Image 1 (cartoon, rainbow, N blue to C red):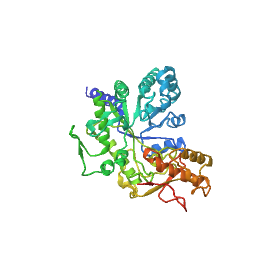
Image 2 (cartoon, one colour):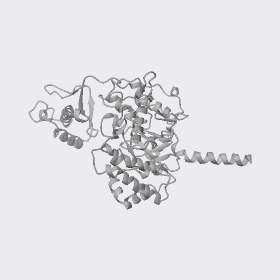
Image 3 (cartoon, rainbow, N blue to C red):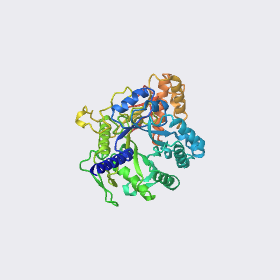
Image 4 (spheres, rainbow, N blue to C red):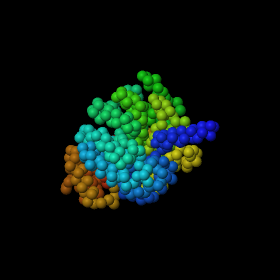
Length: 464
């Protein structure tokens, strides 16, 4: 009888181990591919394993990557691109075809466990795609069932801007334009299918937007003295990450779904950025990522104040610095690795390596806002045709942006593409930065604190 009892306990343990495996607190990595200098997929998979990752998320269903991930035991999350959502939502054959082409050939040797339908779809201006997210999720789920792929969970990835209110956390509320028509049916789907709400959480962005009122240590999990108590829930917070996650927990509760599990689809901190981007440095990036990994992998599980003890599965962003990502400089500097495969800083996604085992970090030099003038100039040794197109675009924007570089004007000479583009970029950026314009131009421009003006030609600048 004793042996039978022990055997029963063993099988019960095995059952719960298997059934709860999908919600283990192991940390994964986001493998983006927006770079023209990244290692091969085979080498990248080796790098992922060397970092201690147990999961990997990609932003498509790249067959080379999925083949490279075969027999690695890494759990994999793949994605239906945003541009396919409308077609899949209205066409069962399209959904079936997508699953047949992008899941069936690789499963189960590649451990595809999560299938995200789109990425941050509601970030853009209102469009038809918004209202097709959930129908597309349903179609994909049905297509997976057709092939008996019942272990693959379906969801979509959302940013924090789905909230119209996030402070205090108890006041978390989804935006009125998406709450009822989009988020509520999505939560219903996730609840019914026992899937996860995939959420991108970046404390860097609210901190960098308001560094005077948000404590940097609080954003980096380093605060020893500063805490915040929510006046409504009376929950006490020791870091910004928990505040952000719980604001979504409370928002879901308001829509009637208090128990849908959250998955951290992306989190991280930039290791570099533009001159005007505060706090983007290696010290802060390493500190944040090491600390968030400690929190997420802690035993027993910590959870958040609103959900103590709940597992938060996660993916750190990102594997590499990706040089073709558009936008401000931080967008190209979230990697744990440089494109040559070397570490930006020491990191262990398993959370098992103590900080003392890592090399010392360089001291941060931009944790205070930059004060002074900045110019936007062309990058040297770039494609002349592309630079010419960018020059034409800059001159077509703003008010008299390129008048001084016209023949006979004060900045026409030297009559070179590089100098004309540099003037145009600075003029464009100085006029339009406050409306969201960046000094990037598809990698053809960069910021400088050195005044490029010469003689009678004075380059417009941004003054911070």
